[in-house]
Image (cartoon, rainbow, N blue to C red; front, side, top):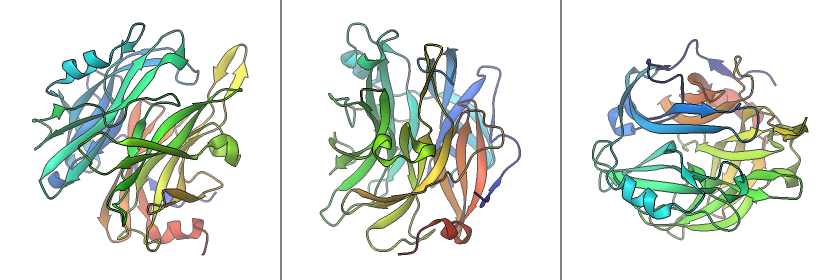
Length: 337
Protein backbone atom coordinates (compact mmCIF):
# COMPACT_ATOMS: atom_id res chain seq x y z
CA UNK A 1 0.00 0.00 0.00
CA UNK A 2 1.23 3.51 -0.88
CA UNK A 3 2.20 5.46 2.24
CA UNK A 4 -0.46 8.06 2.95
CA UNK A 5 1.12 9.34 6.16
CA UNK A 6 4.32 11.09 7.23
CA UNK A 7 6.55 9.25 9.70
CA UNK A 8 8.36 11.72 11.96
CA UNK A 9 12.06 11.37 12.65
CA UNK A 10 13.30 10.26 16.03
CA UNK A 11 11.36 9.38 19.15
CA UNK A 12 8.61 11.33 20.90
CA UNK A 13 9.59 10.49 24.48
CA UNK A 14 13.02 11.08 25.93
CA UNK A 15 13.77 7.84 27.78
CA UNK A 16 15.65 8.49 31.01
CA UNK A 17 18.17 6.23 32.74
CA UNK A 18 15.42 4.53 34.72
CA UNK A 19 13.64 2.88 31.76
CA UNK A 20 14.77 1.15 28.57
CA UNK A 21 11.28 0.71 27.11
CA UNK A 22 8.22 3.00 27.08
CA UNK A 23 4.89 2.71 25.28
CA UNK A 24 1.20 3.64 25.22
CA UNK A 25 0.94 7.41 25.68
CA UNK A 26 -2.41 9.05 26.57
CA UNK A 27 -2.76 12.86 26.64
CA UNK A 28 -5.07 15.32 28.44
CA UNK A 29 -6.74 17.68 25.92
CA UNK A 30 -7.28 20.33 28.64
CA UNK A 31 -3.51 20.93 28.71
CA UNK A 32 -3.32 21.33 24.91
CA UNK A 33 -2.06 17.75 24.95
CA UNK A 34 1.11 18.75 26.79
CA UNK A 35 0.49 16.48 29.81
CA UNK A 36 -0.53 12.88 29.98
CA UNK A 37 0.30 9.36 31.05
CA UNK A 38 2.81 6.89 29.68
CA UNK A 39 3.48 3.23 30.37
CA UNK A 40 7.05 2.54 31.48
CA UNK A 41 8.48 -0.99 31.52
CA UNK A 42 10.34 -1.72 34.75
CA UNK A 43 11.43 -5.24 33.70
CA UNK A 44 11.00 -7.55 30.73
CA UNK A 45 11.06 -11.35 30.90
CA UNK A 46 11.12 -13.15 27.57
CA UNK A 47 10.94 -12.09 23.93
CA UNK A 48 8.20 -9.77 22.59
CA UNK A 49 8.00 -11.91 19.44
CA UNK A 50 7.18 -15.08 21.42
CA UNK A 51 4.04 -15.81 23.43
CA UNK A 52 4.50 -15.79 27.20
CA UNK A 53 6.77 -12.77 27.70
CA UNK A 54 6.02 -10.62 30.75
CA UNK A 55 6.48 -6.87 31.06
CA UNK A 56 6.19 -5.32 34.49
CA UNK A 57 4.98 -1.76 34.26
CA UNK A 58 4.35 1.56 35.97
CA UNK A 59 2.26 4.49 34.79
CA UNK A 60 4.13 7.80 34.86
CA UNK A 61 3.24 11.35 33.96
CA UNK A 62 4.42 12.57 30.57
CA UNK A 63 5.16 16.28 30.11
CA UNK A 64 5.68 17.80 26.66
CA UNK A 65 7.48 20.93 25.51
CA UNK A 66 5.75 20.32 22.16
CA UNK A 67 3.61 17.62 20.57
CA UNK A 68 6.80 15.86 19.47
CA UNK A 69 8.94 16.10 22.60
CA UNK A 70 7.88 14.58 25.93
CA UNK A 71 9.76 13.79 29.13
CA UNK A 72 8.93 11.16 31.73
CA UNK A 73 7.67 12.56 35.01
CA UNK A 74 6.81 11.06 38.39
CA UNK A 75 5.00 7.77 38.86
CA UNK A 76 1.26 8.28 39.11
CA UNK A 77 0.04 8.27 42.68
CA UNK A 78 -3.42 6.72 42.47
CA UNK A 79 -5.36 6.66 45.72
CA UNK A 80 -6.82 3.24 46.65
CA UNK A 81 -4.65 1.40 44.09
CA UNK A 82 -3.33 -1.15 46.59
CA UNK A 83 -6.77 -1.66 48.13
CA UNK A 84 -8.45 -2.34 44.78
CA UNK A 85 -5.71 -4.55 43.33
CA UNK A 86 -5.42 -6.62 46.52
CA UNK A 87 -9.16 -7.20 46.43
CA UNK A 88 -8.86 -8.62 42.90
CA UNK A 89 -5.92 -10.94 43.54
CA UNK A 90 -6.46 -14.68 43.45
CA UNK A 91 -4.19 -17.60 44.32
CA UNK A 92 -1.59 -18.22 41.62
CA UNK A 93 -2.02 -14.79 40.02
CA UNK A 94 0.60 -12.05 40.01
CA UNK A 95 -0.21 -8.36 39.61
CA UNK A 96 2.40 -6.96 37.21
CA UNK A 97 1.50 -3.26 37.28
CA UNK A 98 -0.90 -0.89 35.54
CA UNK A 99 -0.72 -0.81 31.73
CA UNK A 100 -2.04 0.87 28.57
CA UNK A 101 -3.68 4.13 29.75
CA UNK A 102 -6.57 5.93 28.06
CA UNK A 103 -7.88 9.36 29.10
CA UNK A 104 -11.48 10.54 28.74
CA UNK A 105 -12.60 13.96 29.93
CA UNK A 106 -16.02 14.55 31.48
CA UNK A 107 -16.39 18.12 30.22
CA UNK A 108 -19.61 18.78 32.13
CA UNK A 109 -17.97 18.13 35.51
CA UNK A 110 -14.36 18.87 34.48
CA UNK A 111 -13.21 15.43 35.62
CA UNK A 112 -10.45 13.26 34.17
CA UNK A 113 -11.24 9.57 33.84
CA UNK A 114 -8.24 7.30 33.42
CA UNK A 115 -8.75 3.76 32.13
CA UNK A 116 -5.96 1.18 32.09
CA UNK A 117 -5.21 -2.50 31.86
CA UNK A 118 -5.17 -4.14 35.29
CA UNK A 119 -3.40 -7.48 34.66
CA UNK A 120 -3.24 -10.46 37.00
CA UNK A 121 -1.22 -13.20 35.33
CA UNK A 122 -0.28 -16.82 35.83
CA UNK A 123 3.31 -17.35 34.68
CA UNK A 124 2.68 -20.99 33.72
CA UNK A 125 -0.97 -21.29 32.62
CA UNK A 126 -1.78 -18.16 30.64
CA UNK A 127 -5.40 -19.21 30.16
CA UNK A 128 -5.87 -18.46 33.87
CA UNK A 129 -4.89 -14.78 33.48
CA UNK A 130 -7.39 -12.21 34.72
CA UNK A 131 -7.15 -9.02 32.63
CA UNK A 132 -9.46 -6.27 33.90
CA UNK A 133 -10.13 -2.77 32.57
CA UNK A 134 -9.29 -0.54 35.52
CA UNK A 135 -10.61 2.95 36.21
CA UNK A 136 -9.61 6.02 38.23
CA UNK A 137 -11.07 9.53 38.35
CA UNK A 138 -10.02 12.95 39.60
CA UNK A 139 -9.80 16.63 38.74
CA UNK A 140 -6.37 16.00 37.20
CA UNK A 141 -3.55 13.45 37.11
CA UNK A 142 -2.43 14.45 40.60
CA UNK A 143 -5.78 13.72 42.28
CA UNK A 144 -6.74 10.34 40.87
CA UNK A 145 -8.64 7.81 42.94
CA UNK A 146 -9.09 4.23 41.75
CA UNK A 147 -12.56 2.71 41.69
CA UNK A 148 -13.69 -0.84 41.03
CA UNK A 149 -12.83 -1.89 37.46
CA UNK A 150 -14.95 -0.64 34.58
CA UNK A 151 -14.92 -4.23 33.31
CA UNK A 152 -13.88 -7.40 35.09
CA UNK A 153 -12.71 -10.42 33.12
CA UNK A 154 -15.46 -12.98 32.53
CA UNK A 155 -15.61 -16.57 31.27
CA UNK A 156 -14.87 -15.46 27.70
CA UNK A 157 -11.92 -13.14 28.30
CA UNK A 158 -10.64 -9.93 29.77
CA UNK A 159 -10.73 -6.28 28.70
CA UNK A 160 -8.05 -3.79 27.68
CA UNK A 161 -7.26 -1.10 25.08
CA UNK A 162 -10.40 1.03 25.40
CA UNK A 163 -11.91 2.86 22.41
CA UNK A 164 -14.50 5.40 23.61
CA UNK A 165 -17.54 5.76 21.33
CA UNK A 166 -19.98 8.69 21.13
CA UNK A 167 -23.27 8.47 23.03
CA UNK A 168 -25.92 6.83 20.86
CA UNK A 169 -29.54 7.90 20.52
CA UNK A 170 -30.51 5.58 23.39
CA UNK A 171 -28.31 7.52 25.81
CA UNK A 172 -25.41 5.10 26.33
CA UNK A 173 -22.13 4.23 24.63
CA UNK A 174 -21.18 1.10 22.74
CA UNK A 175 -17.51 1.39 23.69
CA UNK A 176 -14.99 -1.06 22.25
CA UNK A 177 -12.33 -3.12 24.04
CA UNK A 178 -9.83 -5.78 23.17
CA UNK A 179 -10.78 -9.11 24.70
CA UNK A 180 -9.78 -12.71 23.99
CA UNK A 181 -11.41 -15.88 22.74
CA UNK A 182 -9.85 -19.32 23.14
CA UNK A 183 -10.33 -21.59 20.15
CA UNK A 184 -9.06 -25.06 19.31
CA UNK A 185 -5.97 -23.72 17.50
CA UNK A 186 -5.01 -20.85 19.85
CA UNK A 187 -6.35 -17.87 21.75
CA UNK A 188 -7.31 -14.90 19.56
CA UNK A 189 -7.53 -11.25 20.49
CA UNK A 190 -11.00 -10.02 19.53
CA UNK A 191 -12.94 -6.74 19.57
CA UNK A 192 -15.84 -6.75 21.99
CA UNK A 193 -18.58 -4.32 22.95
CA UNK A 194 -18.62 -2.63 26.35
CA UNK A 195 -22.03 -1.12 27.18
CA UNK A 196 -21.46 2.07 29.18
CA UNK A 197 -24.48 4.06 30.44
CA UNK A 198 -22.12 5.94 32.81
CA UNK A 199 -18.40 6.42 32.17
CA UNK A 200 -17.66 6.44 35.90
CA UNK A 201 -19.48 3.25 36.92
CA UNK A 202 -18.97 -0.43 36.01
CA UNK A 203 -19.99 -1.41 32.47
CA UNK A 204 -21.33 -4.61 30.94
CA UNK A 205 -19.72 -6.76 28.28
CA UNK A 206 -21.51 -7.10 24.98
CA UNK A 207 -20.92 -9.43 22.08
CA UNK A 208 -17.74 -10.02 20.08
CA UNK A 209 -18.07 -7.87 16.94
CA UNK A 210 -14.75 -8.69 15.27
CA UNK A 211 -13.05 -12.09 15.43
CA UNK A 212 -9.90 -12.49 13.27
CA UNK A 213 -10.59 -16.15 12.59
CA UNK A 214 -13.95 -15.35 10.99
CA UNK A 215 -12.77 -12.54 8.69
CA UNK A 216 -9.56 -14.05 7.30
CA UNK A 217 -7.77 -10.74 6.68
CA UNK A 218 -4.04 -11.61 6.69
CA UNK A 219 -2.68 -8.51 8.47
CA UNK A 220 -5.21 -9.02 11.29
CA UNK A 221 -5.39 -12.80 11.20
CA UNK A 222 -4.55 -13.47 14.84
CA UNK A 223 -5.13 -10.47 17.04
CA UNK A 224 -7.39 -7.42 16.82
CA UNK A 225 -7.40 -4.42 19.14
CA UNK A 226 -9.49 -1.23 18.73
CA UNK A 227 -7.73 2.12 18.54
CA UNK A 228 -8.99 5.72 18.62
CA UNK A 229 -12.07 6.82 16.69
CA UNK A 230 -11.65 9.96 14.61
CA UNK A 231 -13.97 12.91 15.19
CA UNK A 232 -16.52 14.04 12.61
CA UNK A 233 -14.50 17.23 12.31
CA UNK A 234 -11.45 15.28 11.12
CA UNK A 235 -13.28 12.96 8.73
CA UNK A 236 -17.07 12.70 8.47
CA UNK A 237 -18.43 9.23 7.77
CA UNK A 238 -22.11 10.14 8.05
CA UNK A 239 -24.71 9.90 10.78
CA UNK A 240 -23.97 7.33 13.46
CA UNK A 241 -20.63 6.28 11.93
CA UNK A 242 -17.00 6.91 12.81
CA UNK A 243 -13.75 6.00 11.13
CA UNK A 244 -11.30 4.41 13.53
CA UNK A 245 -7.84 2.90 13.76
CA UNK A 246 -7.45 -0.82 14.38
CA UNK A 247 -4.37 -2.59 15.68
CA UNK A 248 -3.99 -5.95 13.96
CA UNK A 249 -1.51 -8.78 14.19
CA UNK A 250 -0.88 -11.60 11.76
CA UNK A 251 -1.79 -15.13 12.86
CA UNK A 252 0.45 -16.92 15.35
CA UNK A 253 2.77 -19.67 14.17
CA UNK A 254 4.08 -22.71 16.04
CA UNK A 255 7.83 -22.95 15.48
CA UNK A 256 10.06 -25.40 17.39
CA UNK A 257 7.43 -25.79 20.09
CA UNK A 258 7.00 -22.04 20.63
CA UNK A 259 4.13 -19.75 19.64
CA UNK A 260 5.66 -17.02 17.47
CA UNK A 261 3.81 -13.76 16.94
CA UNK A 262 3.46 -12.15 13.52
CA UNK A 263 3.69 -8.45 12.63
CA UNK A 264 1.44 -5.96 14.42
CA UNK A 265 0.30 -3.08 12.18
CA UNK A 266 -2.31 -0.31 12.15
CA UNK A 267 -5.34 -0.40 9.84
CA UNK A 268 -8.67 1.36 9.45
CA UNK A 269 -12.26 0.42 10.28
CA UNK A 270 -15.72 1.97 10.07
CA UNK A 271 -17.77 1.73 13.24
CA UNK A 272 -21.54 2.13 13.56
CA UNK A 273 -21.76 3.37 17.14
CA UNK A 274 -25.58 3.43 17.08
CA UNK A 275 -25.82 -0.31 16.43
CA UNK A 276 -22.51 -1.42 17.92
CA UNK A 277 -21.39 -2.95 14.61
CA UNK A 278 -18.18 -2.80 12.56
CA UNK A 279 -19.13 -2.16 8.93
CA UNK A 280 -15.70 -2.47 7.33
CA UNK A 281 -12.06 -3.26 8.08
CA UNK A 282 -9.29 -2.39 5.64
CA UNK A 283 -7.91 -5.31 3.66
CA UNK A 284 -4.36 -4.06 4.20
CA UNK A 285 -2.61 -2.22 7.04
CA UNK A 286 -2.41 1.55 6.91
CA UNK A 287 0.72 2.20 9.01
CA UNK A 288 3.81 0.11 9.69
CA UNK A 289 6.83 1.84 11.18
CA UNK A 290 10.05 1.71 9.16
CA UNK A 291 12.00 0.42 12.19
CA UNK A 292 9.43 -2.07 13.45
CA UNK A 293 10.49 -5.70 13.60
CA UNK A 294 7.23 -6.94 15.13
CA UNK A 295 4.96 -4.15 16.49
CA UNK A 296 3.47 -0.81 15.42
CA UNK A 297 0.61 -0.09 17.86
CA UNK A 298 -1.47 3.10 18.04
CA UNK A 299 -2.43 4.72 21.35
CA UNK A 300 -3.38 8.40 20.77
CA UNK A 301 -4.50 10.77 18.02
CA UNK A 302 -4.41 14.58 18.31
CA UNK A 303 -6.09 16.85 15.76
CA UNK A 304 -3.81 19.80 15.00
CA UNK A 305 -5.87 21.57 12.32
CA UNK A 306 -8.78 20.87 9.99
CA UNK A 307 -8.24 17.49 8.36
CA UNK A 308 -4.80 16.93 9.87
CA UNK A 309 -3.39 15.50 13.06
CA UNK A 310 -0.61 13.64 14.86
CA UNK A 311 -0.84 9.95 15.61
CA UNK A 312 1.23 8.36 18.38
CA UNK A 313 2.17 4.69 18.21
CA UNK A 314 4.72 2.53 20.00
CA UNK A 315 7.22 0.46 18.09
CA UNK A 316 8.24 -3.03 19.26
CA UNK A 317 6.89 -2.13 22.73
CA UNK A 318 10.01 -0.02 23.17
CA UNK A 319 9.61 3.60 22.01
CA UNK A 320 6.95 6.04 20.81
CA UNK A 321 6.82 7.55 17.34
CA UNK A 322 4.67 10.32 15.85
CA UNK A 323 3.07 10.30 12.40
CA UNK A 324 1.17 13.04 10.55
CA UNK A 325 -2.18 11.96 9.11
CA UNK A 326 -4.13 13.83 6.43
CA UNK A 327 -7.86 13.13 6.11
CA UNK A 328 -8.04 13.96 2.40
CA UNK A 329 -5.32 11.41 1.60
CA UNK A 330 -6.91 8.77 3.82
CA UNK A 331 -10.21 8.98 1.96
CA UNK A 332 -8.69 7.03 -0.93
CA UNK A 333 -8.56 3.98 1.37
CA UNK A 334 -12.21 4.14 2.41
CA UNK A 335 -14.85 2.34 0.31
CA UNK A 336 -17.37 4.58 -1.40
CA UNK A 337 -20.91 4.02 -0.21
